[in-house]
Length: 229
Image (cartoon, rainbow, N blue to C red; front, side, top):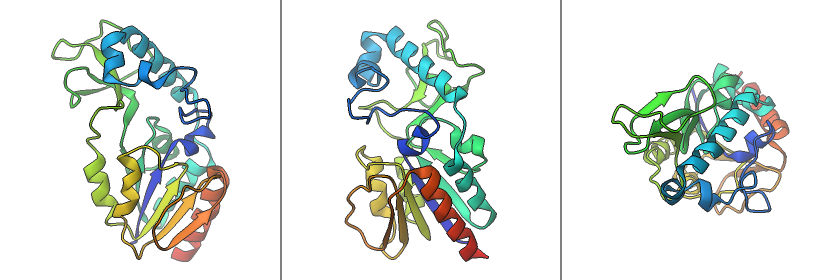
């Protein structure tokens, strides 16, 4: 069974109503990134950071997977599929995808503010100040902030190196180290890039699909399923 590796970015979740800080104004839902998505921001004003991610978590829980998410889940009928996502939502899982790697964490979980390996499930959308991990430290969102290590990047690179087919969906390749994952995909592998604005890449065997995810992903998935029959 061929292995399809999919790297998804904010573009696929945007169609479910979840915005990205890469919008033209450089803000994330009206906030400066430096104020809500760095370790320094947490040290300065943990209440503000906690509030910000509570609002984001509520939006994620209210959002629904779109046609692109469901199409990727459908691929598992004919292929081994690994989804590597830069997104912190759980829309891939809710659409039915069974093998999802979250590079930047998962906002529907919490983590210790002193040991990022201590991760906990959450029942609702609100994480309150005073809720603590087993070490006695404040819980925060399970999200990788700017300036923090990306612990899943090496496993993701190994997966990309094993791809028989590669798909890049809804990402501008502007955030590193995630943007460098495409360089681990073997040169001979076909690479589908699906985005309304295709990022510049200097690699071989690229098929560009200039379209939003809900249209482009569905058409590519239909072709791949037909090819496998």
